[in-house]
Length: 559
Ligand code: PEP
Ligand code: MG
Image 1 (cartoon, rainbow, N blue to C red):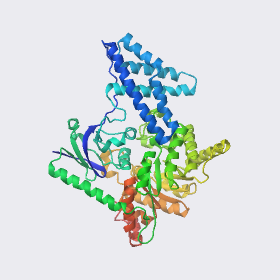
Image 2: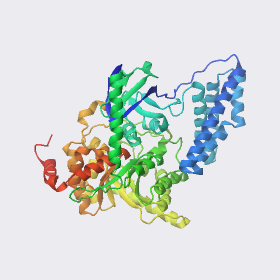
Image 3: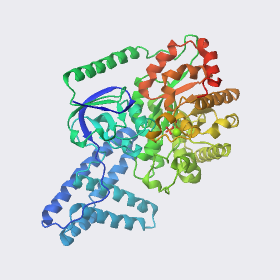
Image 4: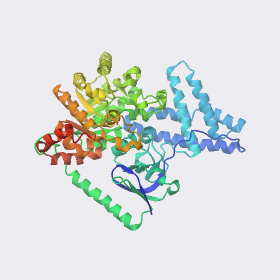
């Protein structure tokens, strides 16, 4: 038995075979082949497999986001079978004796260049498609799997680290748990694991060896323990814990349908954070009151090119209609920092967390913002929508963003396209500037949602991605809690409600503090809804308010 200690970032026990994430290799081997006929057959087999995968993806996209979304994969399918494309590859294999993956690489480059040089914008956009299709075929030829997992059974997935773009593309039905060598608890990969309700352990370093692949692993997300080939006693102890976990869940399930109200009658709304329309069933089954944060950038991370207005419209519409009359707050694109997307072509930055990200990109590249807002307003006709802007620092940014909303509404009106007249507008409070300006910002919006992951990072000048900064990145720091109180006071003075959608919202050690300062909404991962409801229902705020608010300001707590 091998026992490894990491840091648990998403609770729960999971057991299954260990599997190493397969990352696409950036360099393709190039060599001369003797048997060109066999090489051509190798290409044909990979092409057939790619077409099969694309048709499955088209079906999945159709079910989840409608015909428009499916069309992307259907276009890719057609491209994979295109006769000119095939002929070019065959020529390179037969005449130049090139191996199949190199022939596909060269053909892709040649076709992409040809498309990119065309005048027609539609044809130019096909350059990305041909690269994408070719990448899929090359992945099959080299044995590297799209989506990172090629296993018939669900696995415990191990990786050095996973970028958010890699995490969103994983086949979730194949994952029992995550283990990463590096990573930090407030990284988006950890956040996604919690949203999906999958146990996760980070920071195991080099203790986990590739040769353990295929062996049985048990992970305990609450302690951060990883056990390879557990002995009988350890296995039965951990399996018992798994059983207890199920029993606790059954108890929590009894709270479904109950209000989130303290013993002395103070209510708080408990909403969920999601990253995809696929997360809505978990929101509903955990009886959340709404969606407090839909991280819309994950839609972009899941695409190989800018998602079209229709593609986004279908995804937002799906979330809104599946949520019925419950409120859904969709955050506009928050790309940049750790969430990088190749097709945005963002220049390299020394300090990306403080650079061109989120609302700044939207204001600098209004065509991207415009497309997203059109999709959002069109979707608003199908439910109860709130739109929220991330990474605000100044009043003018909010004014400019609202102006774009007005422009979009006027356009839709002129086009006779329906939208709701009741869309609320909010901002995330994630920067010290937004905290200090919250009295003034409150006059511009309907609500605030505190993004404590970034608010901690910027208030404490402490990179949330840097695992070595562990004890310095402290969301319980009085500076962060005082900031939250200040935001609450300024919001309430101006008739604006305040939520918390950072990970801190689910921290049960602070629930009483949040209730004491008057937080109106807590938006958490679906699995955290019922434990939070339980905590709220056990609390009498009147007993603790004075002390907890006093503690925020007292000298003893000035750590
Ligand atoms: C936050 O910063 O707290 C937040 C909710 O946004 P994200 O984690 O996506 O940056
Ligand atoms: Mg943030």
